[in-house]
Image (cartoon, rainbow, N blue to C red; front, side, top):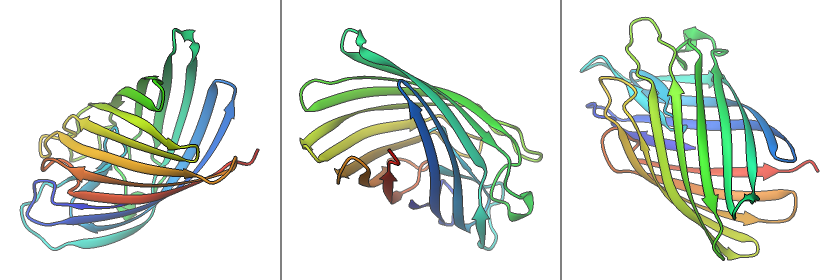
Length: 228
């Protein structure tokens, strides 16, 4: 993922993120572990909102940009999905999230504190369309020298089955303010997934920020490979 934006400051911040993820699924349960590799060109403290987008918390009005690279924190998630056959064609997924401060603090790629959150996703399939609503909450650890808020997020959108091997997704995403220095974030998200076969899926996605609290633009490529 590559994003850039001013986040209400006088300078742009660019964030390049490569995410390595391993997931294990068994029936209606899924467990995932991921670690990002980041290159951040800009200023201030970069953290990630409840939707996983980079946010810059900048306490200084002026100053030179710098570049930091390295591995970020370990992210863990576990989810349980209640099948649509139980809820009159609706599907409900409940997820627990944890970010552990495993990155070295000297690289300034993390807050040095643990974050814990949860999300609830409700969806229903109507033919080729699959509207969904996701609500999340993140309990922030408090690093020394910064004031961070616990945050909420809301994502509303739909998927669309264009072909047997092609799926599009569009959504509006909202995240409450992470800090008194950064406003809440509003943005649009879009993706297109090509299902090559039972093992390989390629997804291209992009975001467009609607206010100063979100990245101006973002784009990324996701490659998923199933082992069985």
